[in-house]
Length: 280
Image 1 (cartoon, rainbow, N blue to C red):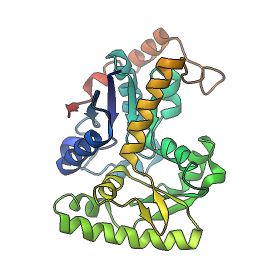
Image 2 (image 1 turned 120 degrees about the horizontal axis):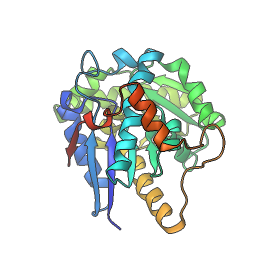
Image 3 (image 1 turned 60 degrees about the vertical axis):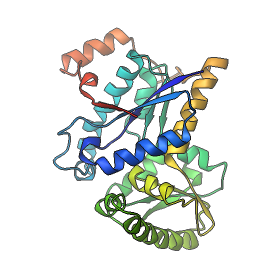
Image 4 (image 1 turned 180 degrees about the horizontal axis):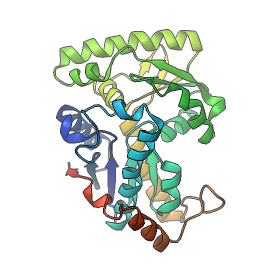
């Protein structure tokens, strides 16, 4: 069964070509030959520079930019995509998104944390930007994974360092070495079994370097996890009819006509059409 998957990044992909090129390479390596993936980033000009963290460290701006994700999900379904992948560990508005669409929505954060339970008992979240650290216990609780979560720790590198790792193998090895050293300390101190390495640019850098374990702890491969889960969920929906719950406040689906009316009232009816795409 051929599939078509909408990929959504929290970055403006045109601003960081080295990352988007590596992203395309890795996706081609992990998806099935008959799976088509179309890359999408945030709308150009979303942020004041090429680093989303300058905005998303603030709760209001994080959720405001998250509206693009809701628009992307509805646009993906309208265009006939089989699934949408949220290639960022926070997976903004994924709970709300799943209540609005009938195609699978796979987020890196909750997807990796759920799957981590098949590889170990205790999972830690490694980030190059920890400004939102205090929000993670609440987010993990909402995903129902509190007992598995053993905290957030710094990777020892910055977003700029990570991007520089895409410029040459030598630079990549230097940056990866610093990440591994930081992670090894956390694994020892917190007895971590599984590392969810976010944000996605850092995770992808580790995958390109072939880092699958640090200090004996399994490192989740974000791209592989997201896209194999998306393919599996599409397959399950087709063969069994399973899809997101429609019970209760968090999952009940509003009337699509009312959604259209509300978006039009706020001037957001064409937001999804503004999201740029890049086929790979």
